[in-house]
Structures are given as structure tokens and as C-alpha cells.
Length: 173
Image 1 (cartoon, rainbow, N blue to C red):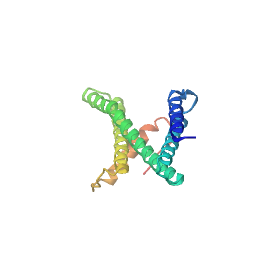
Image 2 (cartoon, rainbow, N blue to C red; image 1 turned 180 degrees about the horizontal axis):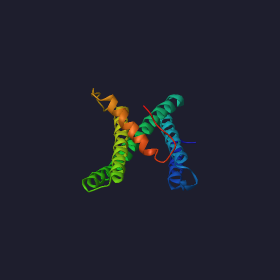
Image 3 (spheres, rainbow, N blue to C red; image 1 turned 30 degrees about the vertical axis):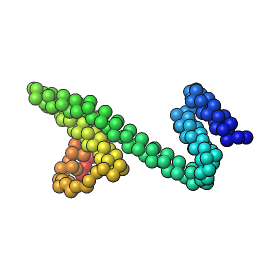
Image 4 (cartoon, helix red, strand yellow; image 1 turned 30 degrees about the horizontal axis):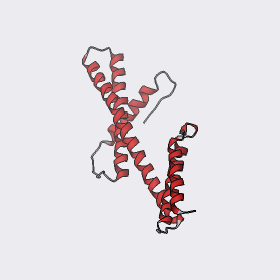
């Protein structure tokens, strides 16, 4: 078969692939199908035009690129989700602060403190996720911070005690 004819058929196959309904496939299957077709097309074109590259080397390069793209996509997902969660969480923290300014019973004060404590803990987790994504991308600098270990333990015990209301569990430190 002549190279021009083969390239023409390859173009037709590519058009068919682009028009294919991927609803029957999962997103991963569709992505793999498209990527494997692109790798095949690139390899075939290189062979036709005289650039002989062993298939193993080409597939290793594609595999490395796929892994890097997957890693970048995961980092972007973590960053995006973290930022999206921070906005409503900041609202919860703000409203809890507003509640504290009003006249509250001791029970209500305890509940608002529990809301604030849980919200702040969740915000810390989200911030750590963002730091992790920055570390993975190589964008974060390390810094030393002083902290009060005893205070952290007290906060954790307080949070745990608020979650164990009405249960026959006692947490002692």
C-alpha cells in the first residue's frame, strides 16, 4: 500500500474516531483509546517519513507523559477543590464569630465554640492539602514555625469531646 493511501485511510479513521460516541466507554477508556490512536498515528507517520523510532521507546515516552499529565491533573483537582471548599467554610467561620457577639446561653456558647473549633480544624486540613499540592508541584518553600504542643493537644481533646456528646466514652489525656 502506498504511503499517501495509508495516510488518507488513517485520516478517515481519525475522523471516525472523533465522531465516535464515547458514551459506551468510561472516561478512562475513551482517553486511553484516543491516546493509543495518537501514539499509533505518530509512530506510523514517523515510519512513513523516514524517522524510524522503536515502538518501545515511543510508548515509554508516552507513558511518562501520561503519568506527568495525570499528576498535574491530580494537583489541579486538589487545588481547585480546596479553594472551592474554603469559600463556604470561611462563611461558616464568619457567621460563628457573629453568633458569639450576641447574647448566648452557656449551652449555645459551647455549641458555637464547637462549630468554630471544627471549622478551624477543617480549614487547617484544607490549607495542608493546598500546601501538599504546592509541594508536589515543587512550588513550596519550607519554613520553621514555633507552636505550643500542649495547646494543640488541648484543642484536639476539646474537639473530640464535642463530638462524643451523649456517648459513654471519656477521653483523658
